[in-house]
Image 1 (cartoon, rainbow, N blue to C red):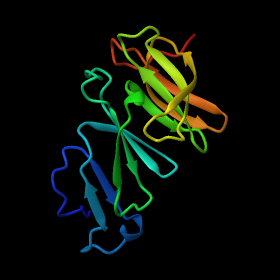
Image 2 (cartoon, rainbow, N blue to C red):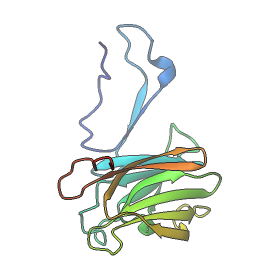
Image 3 (tube, rainbow, N blue to C red):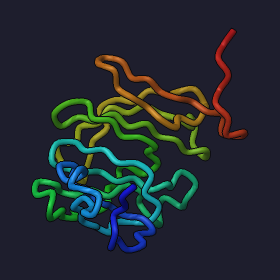
Length: 168
């Protein structure tokens, strides 16, 4: 198997791989570029031309290090860091909900309710505005997928780290 040679130890960041060069041959690794962005990256979501990168910060001091970074991807070969998005602190997952809109799933064990689903206006990439929010069960929403008009949210027990057993 091939590997991407010459890639420094990122720790964490953004690695862009040109998928058109994956089958370039056994002696030629795919073209790639490295963009160091932030520590502890655990989630990404592109909304329009902006790529949002989220840090694994559910238990970090959110006031010291905002966990989401916005990157302008209009020129994928030269991403431009726009800045941290303070309004996305505590967001576990960010889901594209159409032009200028996103759904955010938040989790903060210190809050009541602990988990929220928020509908966001993303027309200003650095200052999303909450349009509506609803409380979710007091379980850790660790992943989500949008299926048309439905949002599927995977829940875990925050104490055990195990998936929530199916009812019945």
